[in-house]
Amino acid sequence: MNGDDYNNYGLDTLAVRGGQIRTHENEHAEAIFPTSSYIFESAAQCAAIFSGEETGNIYSRFTNPTVRTFEQRLALMEGGERCVATSSGMGAIMTTCYALLEQGDHIISSKAIFGSTVMLFNNFVTKFGVDVTYVDLTDYEAWEAAITPKTKFLFLETPSNPLTEVVDIKRLSELAKSKGVLLIVDNCFCTPVLQKPLELGADIIIHSATKYLDGQGRCVGGAIIGTEEIVGQSVFGFLRTAGPTMSPFNAWVFLKGLETLRIRMKAHCENAMQLATWLEEQNSIAHVNYPGLKSHPQHDLACQQQSDFGGVLSFVVKGGKEAAWKLMDNTKLMSITANLGDTKSTITHPASTTHGRLTDVQKQEAGIDEGLIRISVGLEDVNDLKNDLKL
Image (cartoon, rainbow, N blue to C red; front, side):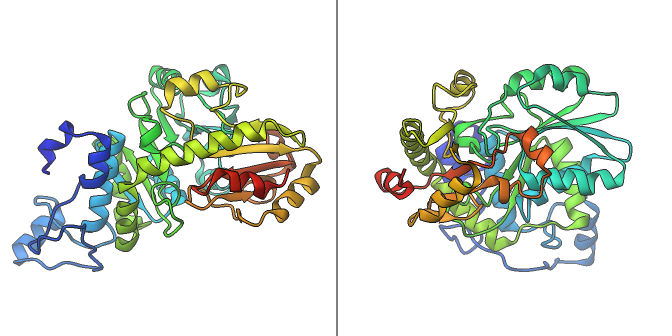
C-alpha cells in the first residue's frame, strides 16, 4: 500500500497494513529499528536533513521508522493528519499542554477525568502560570460560562473514567469553535473502533496506548492525533526537544495490537454488556454505570455517538469501602490492578487508587463514591466473571 491508496480502504485494513514501508529486506511483518542514530551519505545531506530541507531520520528521540509506522497507522485509523507517539498516556497529555500553552493561558477540564490528569493540571501545569477550571462533564452551560478570552482548550474524556459519563462531542465542538478554542478528547475507552472524535469536531485526540491499543498489558505508551499544523508542528516540536519519546520496541508491540483491535473491542463490549446487565439485577449493588444500559443517563447519546459501548463499567456496592474491598478480595479470577484495556479482566477501587490522591471534596465533585468499583471487562468466559464476583 502507498499513501495514495489509504483513502480507499476500511478501518480493519488500515489497522493491519497502514503506514508500513518495507525495507530492502522485504520483510512481511513490520521491522523494529532499535537504533539511536542514523548515518548520512554526505555532509551536505546531513545538513539538509537537519535543517528540514530534506526528510530523513536523524535521532530516535524524534525520528524512528518503527515509531513512525505506528504514528501513521493510528492517524489513519482516527482520521487525523498527524500523530505523535509518546512514552505514556500521561506523557501525551503533558506534551500537549507544554506544546500549546503559555503563561497566562486558561484551560477548562471536565471534573470526570483520570486522577493523575488532575494532578498534572493542578500541581504542574498551574506552576507555569496557567489557570485551570473544572466543570461537570455534561453541563454544557457550565462549559460555556467558564470560557474566557484566555482559554486555550477544553479537555475531557468520553466515556469518562470511572463513571462512564458520555458528553456530546459535536455540541462541545461547536461551542469551542464559536469561541476560538480547541477541543481535546481522550478516546482511550472507545478507541477509533467505537468512536471518531475528529469526525465529530474535536481538534485533538489523546490515547493511552497502554490500554486497548496494546490490549494485553505489555507496554506503556501514548499518542496525540490531530492536524499537521497543531500536532505535526507544535506538538512534534516539543517532543523533538524535550524527548518524552516512545521506544521502537513498544511501538512495534502497539502495531501488533492495532491489528486485532476491532476483534478485541467487539468481544470486550459483548462481555461488558452481559456483565453490566447482570450486575444491575443484583440486590447488593446500588447502581451500575455502563453506557449500554438503558438506565444510563446518556444511553441515547452513546447510541448516536459510538458504534458500541466499550469494555469498562463501574458500580456502587452497598456498604461503602468495606463492602467494596471485601468483594474485591474475594475474587479469584479478576486481577486487582488499576490498569485497564487488557484481555484479562481487572478490578479496582477508584477512591483509593486511580483517584486516591484527590481530596475528599474533589472525589465528591467527581462522583467517586467509597463503594465504587471499576471493572475493565476482559475476554474470559462471562459466566466465570459473574461467578468470580460472588454476589
